[in-house]
Length: 218
Image (cartoon, rainbow, N blue to C red; front, top):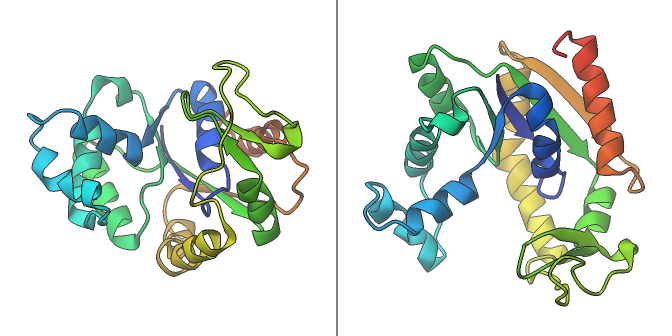
């Protein structure tokens, strides 16, 4: 099964993708992880094209598509993929459709996490990260250090109101149109509205599972 996760930054796409992976027999695929893997391997054919990341520049749609196409050919993704952070634009969505069609596959399911701005601010501004294992926590947990690594948690430099608002504007401009693209397409479309900051990832995951059962997917 091939699943696309939609939602603004901080909506929990990665968390939900990891929780759903076993039930849907699909492996989460993060474009960020793919880029980092390529940058560790100078012999990779796409290595020269992703060097702009080190300069803080954006990678073109064409290069992102090539990186994803290269990634999904790996054996670990043959049973299915949960796309996290891709596609971000209509052009990328169309490219993904072409890739999957060539594999005699298609996007089967879209999960759209519609999280309100208030909840996003609460989540992101309260987020704390372990600089070693990268595990994320929230200040409401009242932790000062990672329980596994035993080193102080930090707040990411980009976890601030200005950056959050800029990312939301970019999402609404470039990524939100994907809602119409997939809503009118072939995939099963499930949308969840999250407007209560007290809801846990498990609460949301249980709702997603219930909706999947209603669609006869589980």
